[in-house]
Image (cartoon, rainbow, N blue to C red; front, side):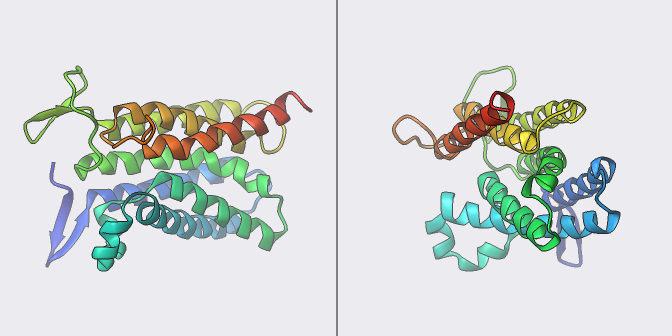
Length: 239
């Protein structure tokens, strides 16, 4: 599938960018549905904070955590976001910082917005992974699995679609948990824990070099699993 949706007088509009935009649009409407006592105006302001934080964090995460030498050699490529190259661990950090800054400005508790935001974030992340698939990047390991696809004559795991399914699964779990009574911060730490666990699992099908038996994504996910479990325990058992 051509990653370019349409070319208008040399200006390329890519599926990746369109899907990312759809993720934020759906995220906006989901936030409106679950906003509680937060006004529509504040939700729109919050979305702007998150848009900037997530994209900047994701791009910096890709540059620092995965491809520092490539971007040092091709500095202009840093700005080519539409070509892909966004790291989800970086996006997570950027989103957390954006949430902190917004809540500090508006005198909200950190968890007031974070507990809401993780639901649309999980859903929106699914679109980004589908964009990775259309961009023909981040293919998985060579495999004869029934799910494998032909990539330049080699059968490989479509790990981008595994990631998309992972995010949809997290979204479904959080949407269900949002209907039950819970302690503040529970949703946020559940997202962190689930993201870490499922990302750790999906990494087994990715075509990455390993360090001490684990891929970079698995190493970056371990702290999320540990911190997520610790703080979830505090919010469920030690109430």
